[in-house]
Length: 363
Length: 79
Image (cartoon, rainbow over all chains, first blue to last red; front, top):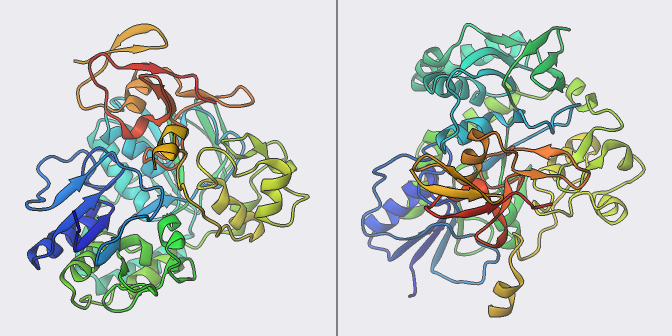
């Protein structure tokens, strides 16, 4: 089957793109490696409308070896993790990570949860976990009050976001606070206090999943895919929508998806909000000094911080220590090394995920 | 409720639950790291591979991307 539009990623941006493409009369296929549509924000939601759109779920894209008139990348974002002692313990997950687990069936009823890190996601996670029965004892935001007050005043420009922020506000929200060390069943915070918790849900913001865009040679600028008003990348026929072009949330994702699918220009100026988020939740330098010599940086290969200090690039770290050489292929430790040392991790090659040898032979 | 087998022992899991969530609900860590540490999922969204398990004989499956099915056999032997 030859498709007019192939959309990769079935979160809000990809779904909006698929519906708009279908509406514009395009033969449309949507692909996601999850077992159903929704991305993370609508994970597990029933009744997502995709009439007339061909779909392939539980499908990992390991290479861009297919063609269509238009390929729309909507691969979303992942969380940025920073290493601190104890972050590899079984009760420590990402913030969005614990939320994703709760949405896929993890029972958090009656569990005490400390949420820590940075960004508006922390409050959204707190609200969702509370609805699922968890006891949210602390929400620690590393940004200072001054940044957050400025953010609040700027939100007047986006009334719907302001309303959402007020709805999500939680009495346990504490700015200027971050984790120092996790131990089984508890976490020591930067105020010197230890908080008991069944789960520590911790992440320091979102990063775009750039692997496919890089494989397609799309131009990346300041960490995001560069697009024009029609969401087209620097490569003819390849479009990027949603968090790939800037971390800006649901409204931006849907507006960009719709424009790319329909072939129109994106309405509204979403990049102002992207910039405001970046400025508000800028990471403080102390967070990059939490790792101790024996703190693990690469969780796949268990490479401690001390083994990377003699290296001068990601490539050297890979060759000398196997850091970033495990199954996640540096998706978690690559951004960590970039934060700690400033090393870019921009090399990708197919297959983008580990695949059985059988699949390679068959292809 | 689907019946699943984890490391040779029969268990029951809730409907519409992923393998990664089912393991956490049962208090079973998803893998043991190369230096012997117990690990659980980190990202919950198919990126970090901490939830990698063997499902029905196929290694390196991400437990967070696969829902439990009746009769499924899971092994937490991935390194």
